[in-house]
Length: 174
Image 1 (cartoon, helix red, strand yellow):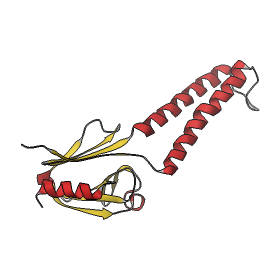
Image 2 (cartoon, rainbow, N blue to C red):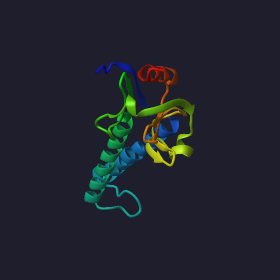
Image 3 (cartoon, rainbow, N blue to C red):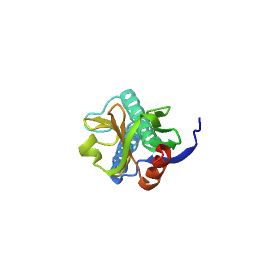
């Protein structure tokens, strides 16, 4: 069976507010505790009005620095990969999904490109489930909504709706 790739899109977080959140968390967890550890452990000046022990500060500061680095790595590595092949559509929300979830073309009843509200309709970004169905989205408000033969709706966010639509039409023979 032919499995030619017709469309591939890789999306990453690009929202300015998400970057601010990540930067604030990273700065707080790394810079703040690095300063606290330097002041108390190196310069022997107690940090704060009720300083914790050197051991507790070292453990807490190290754990929060590791958390900050992991949070930054997670944000930088998260991506939605969408592929349309001649016989199926596949999605992977890395690193939360290690392998693709695929929908064979004979399971797809209809599809349409439409504007939508990730927050209002699905409760946010990422892999979401709501009364409308499932959503896989990273940014923006344009997506391709699949309706499967069993009645399940799947919204797939895209930054390239025209190319996505063209690939879906080729796959489904429209």
